[in-house]
Image 1 (tube, rainbow, N blue to C red):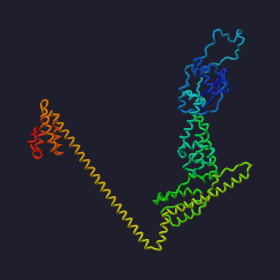
Image 2 (cartoon, rainbow, N blue to C red):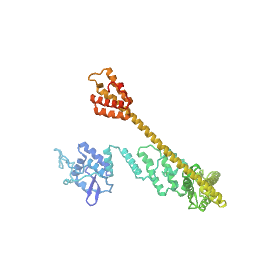
Image 3 (cartoon, helix red, strand yellow):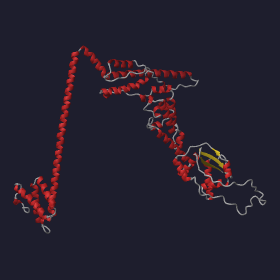
Image 4 (tube, rainbow, N blue to C red):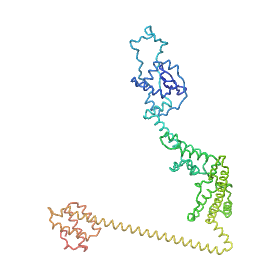
Length: 539
């Protein structure tokens, strides 16, 4: 048998050894994983543990075990978590030891009675050795054993974990969501694909560095490689992987990348409309983005900036002169029709080349016209040009300009004054409205308080049994309630609140309650709000 042993030498650290036992049941090339599984089966047949089996085999043949130690290459040291599980599954301290049982009583041994057996040597004394399973193969075996996985399941899970580590290590610099339609692209239509989007570099495009392209390509390959997909159980074709490879091939070739950048419409910035640039700050911000995008095609560098509202007339004129005489390197070879590379059909090949040349020339003319119109639109919206023209006219007609400026200032002052008046009026209206709302709330609150107090007053006579010693008659109840209604009809909120306060103090004491009502009626009679003759109970 072949088994894997580990020793921790004091000076050299972990070393890895292979040894053979007395029974060469397995080939010398058997892997440690194969041997470990065979040991388990061997142990189960005899009712032993794996540790006891290894100990018994070494103790039975220590000389062979010691004479055949060979140092192997070091492998990765397991993590603390893996070491913990290994110790739990296979403890290094094998205290329980069972020796090989003695031979049966009828065993003749090395004697004339047993001519077929000859002892060549004797066993050396047993030696206790520390056995520790170790190595990448054993880690994989222990992981599968602990989680109950098959080989294919474990490989799939490990591949998924590695792909996730790659995603987690990404700092977000080249991360962006993947469009499902892009993932389903046909690799044959590579001319129509957005190579930057395929690699996740949409926000960089022509500004992407070689290092960013390299990192993006590596990330996409690790995620979409057909082998990785198969390992994780995904049945996805290699079409998008071919798209990734094509994008990397084009973007790493300076000539072909320049051709693609020449027709990369996704990097273009649409010119703003008049409505979008009504504010001066919006004009400079939006048009500056447009010209920065177009500047990537310029043979002359650096390109003049659009500037701002404080730019001089010379700077503005230099800017527009540059763009009206723009020297562009832009080509359109990327959109060419493929030219056949066979030796047959030379006339057809020349026809295609001529067709492509004419198409490029046409597109170049259209691009020049497009750029000129773009500059014309910017010039028409540029308030600085209008201001410069006004300044030129001011030299010829200074008084007229001064009058216009004064009128303009007056209009602005009026507008400001009107705006200030409108603001003050609005604040006053809001204040009055708030006061009105507050008054409504206070009135409603007072009404609610009066209603509540009236309920308390009516309930107070009921709580004292309408001042009757026994069950009151209907006439007695009506008399008390009539007086209560007359009191409530003539009392004001403050007097009502005072009456409720007295009733709360009186509680359910009928005499005190009646005194409280009598005091209130007396005050109402004294104020002329109520006649004493109208009362029946509270006189």
